[in-house]
Image (cartoon, rainbow, N blue to C red):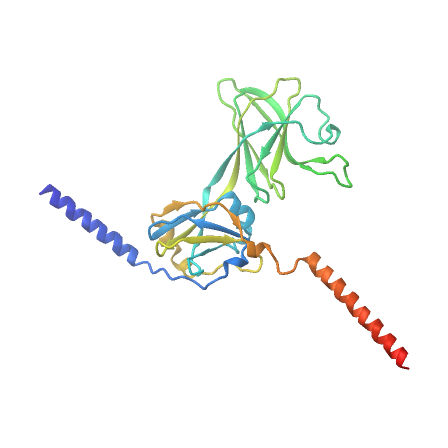
Length: 311
């Protein structure tokens, strides 16, 4: 009797689940040529239904990003038709652990800080062109006060023969309670076109401050959509001629945001060969133009000589 009741309950729950999914009408959008996008990412296969696709650092850096509402980001099915999605902005940041590498700044000390006792650390970022974010630093020390600089190293140019250290954030970090752990130091940064940052700490006359953790806090987003079938989907981005998508799905965005979703992460990023290779590069264009002008001038000279000979 108990087994019969459980079986009936299971079948009823399954029927409700199937019915609720069938109420969602998933219509694909207009087709797009994936070769026109600079980057492709495969979305792992899964069952039809609601999906929450995490936006990772590579997508943040290589797409047109949140400041342009991810205007060039598209999800394509196996027929290259668009799968409508909505963007979910999450309150909790995307946390990327960084490994502080103790190293000397690769620039002349005169161009950095005139302090005899300082510690410097190299922080390798996931990639360049990341959006505005934060760097969070932790220490196990309880009583301390240090001057902290975060910056980038610029290569040699007209301003500096040996390169230069460009400060992008600076503050004084201190704590004076033996009983309580120090709060993490949070610095707001916009990394820009660099793939590494440098942390410089003025130790004064003290030993080096122990750094126990460094984290990159990025803005966190997910792309929410309904997977129509088990077909393989592709995430594409890296294009400057598109406006932000306008899908009818946005009209029922509340339902999608509240739906239980399978959380997935796109697979490795791969540049699109067709997108990387233009038919004619700028250098080739000017070379061809110069050759064409030279040939044209040669023909004009020949025609002029012929006319003079005939006359």
